[in-house]
Image 1 (spheres, rainbow, N blue to C red):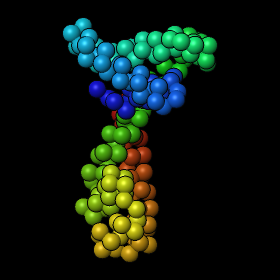
Image 2: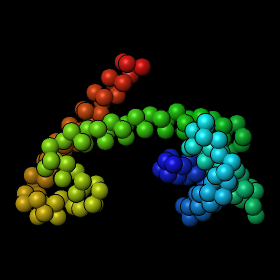
Image 3: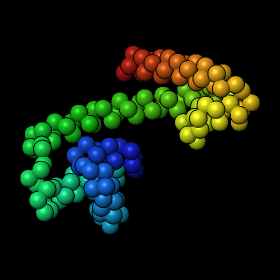
Image 4: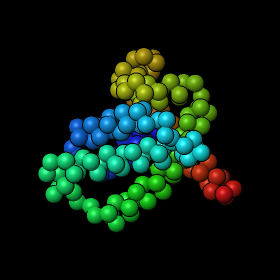
Length: 162
């Protein structure tokens, strides 16, 4: 299952964050309980989003939340369509990013992983990789530019093929 896409979908309709997390958890429990009803010929994420849609309706119909619901059915359908279109584009970008990171030289990959996966600051990265702090800032900028260009190239190639 694509948890980030499910999470983004629920957060589109439910706020505050704790309530959205509760809806996500209820969705996961319902999906686990009803997995025997899942039709493998359909996309799994689409099935789980349908469960989430029902959990969101239940969220708004409980207590007095239904008075606070901002969107009508047409607006929700429109948001869902926009979400679906955008999520496939984001998936293409994420796939391209993974590819481009894999093509980086080892030291550049270590810098990016330290910064974004390990959440290290430039000073800590510099110390860890025996670099100056300024060179870490410079390399991060260069690496981000290289990744952006690589992603744009891959997306253009995919667009021209499609």
